[in-house]
Image (cartoon, rainbow, N blue to C red):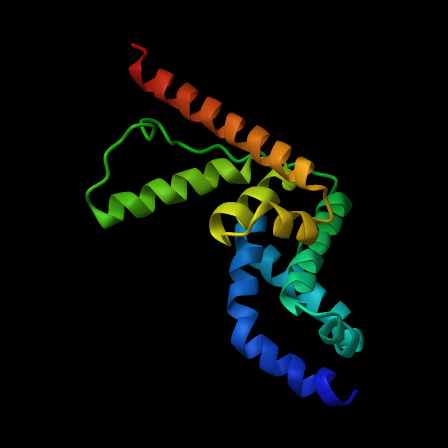
Length: 173
């Protein structure tokens, strides 16, 4: 490798953007170890072709897509579905004054997100955590823009239903 795609360039990119890539992977996988594995898989695969990745532009988008692919591959290989159960009763409509309450609310919402199907979770993470636009999400996930919108719409509908169900459980005698 020479020029814009050296091993040193990859290391420099990791120094600057590696933390954000790991946070993205964590939000996608909801597990620190799985997130680290997905990032490692993506970086190992990117290393031999780093020069071409940089030349193509936006290596961050390429690596985020690689993380999504690595996570999906590991999930498919495991052949097991995890359905986490979260106690989020009373979160809907709750007024949050204390920063600790805000953090607890965000944690509970991310627990609900963990139960979403992978495609929906990836789209939600890219939209609401990374602040990406629909076209950016579509490019990252290799979906059409309309698929991105429908995945986010379905995810939000699922989250609303689960929050309403949790609120109902609290108000039931």
